Length: 147
Image (cartoon, rainbow, N blue to C red):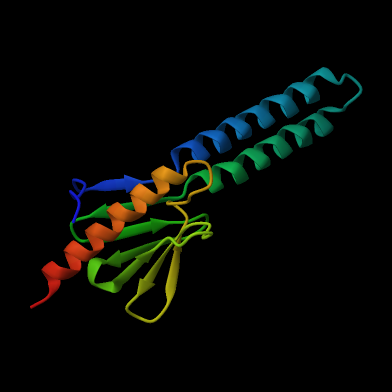
């Protein structure tokens, strides 16, 4: 088994996050600037432009919030609109198969949980390394929990 990362550890798609937040800021600034430069717009119309820019930024910020936090007691999976806390014993398997958009956790209740915090989109090698690290942690922790 490879060396385990020190806990607590956070896995998140750093480049994807940077792209999403940069795009969100740029969209907000451009829409706000256009609204302020268009003299024929009423204050209400300008406000609607600014609010539209803020809404678009908020959507991109929600997409950028995904992460996985592993600590001594388990894993917290933060996806776009949900957050779930799992004990190590609940995680049976960590999967990132070729073509998968993100990691999936096979859970002890028979379900599978998508983990958007590890995704091979922009940084494939990083995602593979993160998936392997999370898998190694899950295997190590589940072995510790055996009687």
